[in-house]
Image (tube, rainbow, N blue to C red):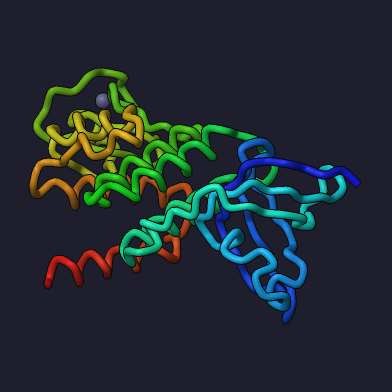
Length: 255
Ligand SMILES: [Zn+2]
């Protein structure tokens, strides 16, 4: 039976039976895969923290090629992202990143860019305080890698560049809509034209540079509404971890 080796990051780990766990990994060589971790719940420390969500590991697993469920053989921690685990708001943010990738990525479609985005996103999460900006960049970068990049340079209908004060955005057409076209085709959302500059920035910037970007005061919610809703238009549902991030942010801002 073939044995596979890869670096991986744990996306999800759930109890499968009294003894076993089912672990979803994003590997850098084979894409997203699922493994049964036999006796992970019975034998103490058999896999330990190496199958906890967000752990960056060296993974060995086996099984027939192109099957959907493999057997976990060995996992060694390369980096546990302890600084993320020490902060409740960062934990939920890291889990949100993992959950989004789990929802948007098909199994066994190797794409090292997705693995790298998750790794760089978690690395940046360890050192950054502005989690809101980081979330927006992660969402936008993931959409681009998944092939759902929004049209931000010209109107998605008439193809003209707009210079008006407000701009529309259509989730269906996946792009901005100029004021003239907005009369005929009501966009789902309208935003101040000044925000477009920031959307373009997060569309192109490397996630490791997230601490260099700060949204103007008062625009954070508008940018969140747009980018997060853009993601939801593809996922079809709100990731379970997202309300926790929002609640934590509320608690922190009120103390
Ligand atoms: Zn137009």
